Image 1: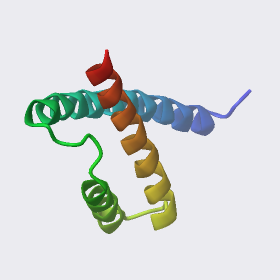
Image 2: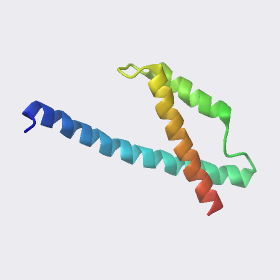
Image 3: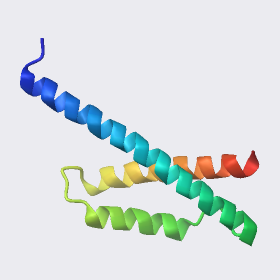
Image 4: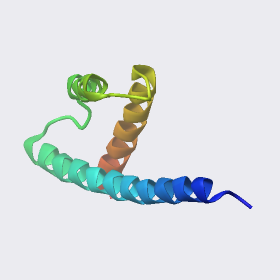
Length: 92
């Protein structure tokens, strides 16, 4: 049986995971809206300079305990999934 302290922190993780899920989907929604506008304007979906700027900003604002490499990997994954959602919406 986990201690009350472990249970407390697990509950906090569950709460944060729910927030992350909501935020990931909110971000994907915004990416889709941007994709629709890009299509209207004839612009490319992927903008490597923008993606690099997002990652640089995230690393600059990071206060740990995750290091910069971890933040880079997380944001690369988030950006890739948002781009996938954006492309799927435009194709579908």
